[in-house]
Image 1 (tube, one colour):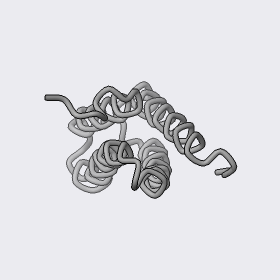
Image 2 (cartoon, helix red, strand yellow):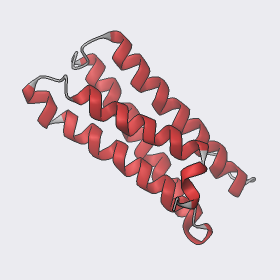
Image 3 (cartoon, rainbow, N blue to C red):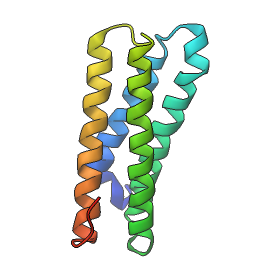
Length: 120
């Protein structure tokens, strides 16, 4: 039996991001795998969980705000990883960044639809 959130486009994109992060971290050096790699993995999984939780109307606004904060943290961490040359290729960085931006846009859109007068 599938859950109600599994059909949400944002959930699918967030899950794609978490899976990609898991696969790319495997290629990190030993040092980075257990430092920034752990942070990347934890944040990406946290975002998937928050998106699923946001499907409950009673906690949606606060959960989406938390998800947006986590997405920003992930964006910054991915950028730091690029700067310290953790990714094996520029394409890996670009793909991770693109997925993160896609999730951010969808989350922002969902948040705005719940709070039409609120600006981010």
